[in-house]
Image (cartoon, rainbow over all chains, first blue to last red; front, side, top):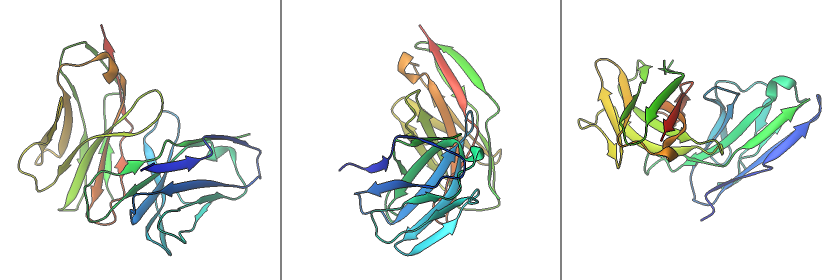
Length: 113
Length: 114
């Protein structure tokens, strides 16, 4: 199993540009999450999904959108990028009926200039 | 709302010594889970240990143990016999019985010296 994979690893955006951060898991996990980590801080929840077609907002959803059309994929869309969105983005997943460990992807480092 | 507080921005310990990283939490839920994650300089999030709110025994995983004091709402991580590879950022986190979303503290940077 590859676990949770994220692409790209790094990206630089100009203010106002848009992009999609990709997240895929091959563990058949039903719950998936997006977190952001600002410098020197802990992770904050952006959006989460409990299954295909079901998403909900987390603590910091403004400026982002998500979709979940399949169990495996949970892309995060940034519209009109702003410098405040400079952060490291982590995708995570878990099987709701299994162990409590959330599996994290390696992260995407995004800089908005 | 849930809240995690880690009051130690940084900790120093010598190799082979034990170290305790503090974590206090606040929640109105009766059922919740407490986690510790390690984040080395490479950036990945590594799961260390989990404690459920109804677990009577403190969780242990190898050199890691979680000192769970429910009445004090604390969930301190104890690392025994520190190693140089333990140098990293450590995050305490909690989840409720809902959709397993995690609330993180700000972290503690641990430096292990020879």
